[in-house]
Length: 137
Length: 486
Image (cartoon, rainbow over all chains, first blue to last red; front, side, top):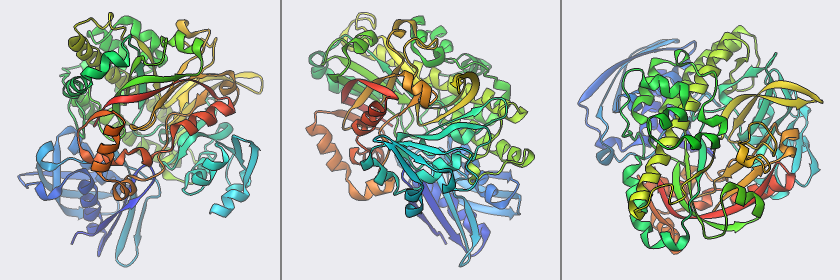
């Protein structure tokens, strides 16, 4: 299930990600973010990467997770279309993400997402779980 | 919220609106927004006034939490936000600088006229687009080896000039001579370095651009002449970019550090994105040293892009950059925190000035103004949107007294990117730009729509408010005839 929506913010872009579990929210937020960057339908899963991130609380963990993915996009030139979370705690996340090397033409790169921010950051239990994140674009 | 914010708003004059401290308990100083009545209604529609109030919570903030007339909703600070904190007991906040550290603008003069350029503009834009890498995740033509990146981070534009990108004289016409003191690569993570390595010498995407412009109107002849602009019709080149992924990573790394520092120093804030630490704490000092590295990366970046622009024009016209008069007018940072001396209550005080989408605007006579402009003041470069025009202004004594030497930085968005996509089409915008005789190349068509003129305030209104308030004076207006965009 992919459930996210892109919301308006004057200068930047917001994402609301939903899911039956916090794990789904994390996955859907990552999908939402990469859907802004490129056409994910065009991404072939030929590469995978293991990610471990830590943060003092789960909201910050969400921002840290998204920013780690942005780092890999910029520094390793990797784009991801599938996210498998192996372990999710309050302060730690371990995941395997699938995708491939960026091909600007084939992936139709759209928006440069600079970072996920802490501004108005929310992760709540609400009709399942729901996160609100603002991205600097 | 809207009514509450209006209740707390006090009109001072046509261009100044104060937000009372009772607007939000915890504000240490009042807020001050530079705007006219028209703009004010628009400003009230988003959360930017509340962000002005939030910034007023920062420990050690002095004067007022200010917003320039291009204020709009950002994250943490509003865009257009200016806040000065005491170095002695105040804080520095990475959110008051933003992810794109030393995003800024530089303006290059020429002795070419519109007539010289017009027949070749298609070719010029096509070649600039090839020679200057742009677009999402674009990689540069510079391959840095070993500790070369550390030299970039320490020396900024000076590194670029030493490597043959431009002239030594360029350095005289860059804010801080293109090298912010105190840069320490040791305070920068390996991740930031890895992210920055391939991106030096790239324009990036979003609102970043390179424009070939024609001087349209001159308001202050003497100032324009001092800056090297003699007449309307003269060609200028405007470059807008920043520190790319390097800066984003530095900011992200230090937001984490500051998140912990807020607990350690027991600082209460209304927004996590404002996380900060005392200027004099180890965390504050480390951030300033890392931020200076990013500022220097950005100055080196703009210096390299300037060099390729000169080379491109030189090849096309078969004349040297010197013969074409491709002299740097100035380069300003508009996302930065600087330790500066300002007069507060009649006494000199060392303060940390956060400019988040605001430009330094020092007056005539200030030691940091280049000698060539000493009698005039520091050039302020204010880009508009790609379909309209940009301004050059000059710093004033009033800015020094009121805004810690700061003024506006651009047009300011009024429509979100997704709203722009809903309301405009790429073909419409293409037609409009063609009708205006603007030749352009964009790395992707989405950014063409997102950056449509109508998504922005008219920069003329912004500049007029700054001029009316006295925090900068208009010098000239220039319109684009060629644009490359990421």
